[in-house]
Each structure stands twice: as structure tokens, then as C-alpha cells.
Length: 241
Picture 1 (spheres, one colour):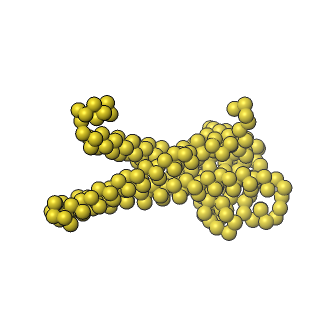
Picture 2 (spheres, helix red, strand yellow):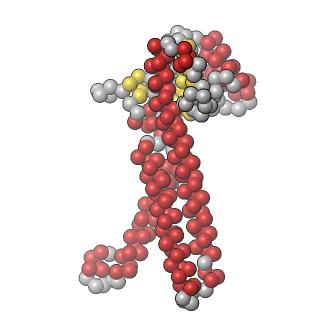
Picture 3 (tube, helix red, strand yellow):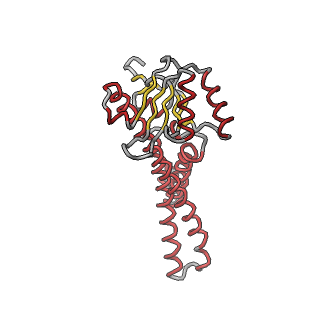
């Protein structure tokens, strides 16, 4: 099409419209992968999360420009006011998508902070300061967490509480890899250790001699990020991996 425009066989406007259609399709494709699709939060990377936000914002910005142009045509009498509602409805839909993307990005940033804080607390627990022990607990158990043990934990939790165990990360994830941690053979569960479900889970893990870390929050004094890390500490990924 660029060649046809350069040769004078197509007007410049046709190329601009084609670029707009392509840009819209590219942004929608990003959202299908990162916002609408089956990709779990912990499988996102920081780059993908930013791309998701950018795509949603681009769609809003383009629709704002289209609405401005349509309103201008109405003001100069070149179009009827009855033509405007579809533009406004589409803008409202895209703004809702942007808000949804923003919430997902906020959850991702919270998860990043949770992983970062988890490693800080793991290292601090090894030193044994009392203030850290109020925020996190460590149970050494047998030092081993077998893959065959986790279905037992899930089944027992389901039987006791009549809803699934809230698993936030099972094994290796893109998020852990991006932060330099090998999370294979570990499971994160989004339960506060002092809640009824958390107290029950601690008792079960201790009975089974399964090691765990229980964190009361990513930030001291706040419940945000409270979770269990089931299994031994995550290893740092070496340069050879």
C-alpha cells in the first residue's frame, strides 16, 4: 500500500487508515494475551504488564480522537448529533478495559513486592531477629516437599473448608524467573497464617513434616501479601541455568 501511495495510485488517507487498523489489531492482540486470555498473573513479566497498560491506553486515546472528530463534525453541521452515541459507548467500553488492565497491573506489582519481600524475610529469618519473627514464621520439617504431597493438601483443604486452596504460584513461574529465583518444587498459597484457614494449614504441614514459610504481609503491619511458601527456600538462579 505504501508503494501504491508513493506511485499516486492510492490517496495518502488510505495508508493512514490502514496503519490505524493495524495499530488497533496489534493492541487488541496484546490484550488478548495479557488481559483476556488464560495467562495467569504470575506468568506475566514486567514488560508484558507494561505492554498491556500501553495497549489499553492506546485504544482509549484513539477513541477519544475519533469522538473529538465526530463532535467537531456535529458542531459545524456536517453530521447529526444522533451519530455520537456509538462513539461514546465505544469510549466507555475502552475506558473500562483500561481500568481492568490497571487493576491487573496493580495486582502484578503487589505480587512482585510479595516475592521480593519474601526473599528478604527468608534471609532475615536465618539471622533470627525477633522483629522479623513477628512478620514471618519458618518451619523446617523434614526439609523435603514432594510433588505427591501437594494433592493430599489440596484435597484435605477442600474437604475441610468446601472451597479450593487459593494457590497463587505452583512451581516455576515467569515472575520468579524474572526476579532470579528458581521456584520449582515450591507452592505459594494466598492465606494469612493467623486466619482459620492459615492456622489449619500450618497444623497440617507440621503433621506432614513439610517445610514452609508463613508471611503475615509483604509490608510490616499490613495484611497485603500474606501467604504461605510451601517447600524449602527458593534457590537463586545461577548464571549457568
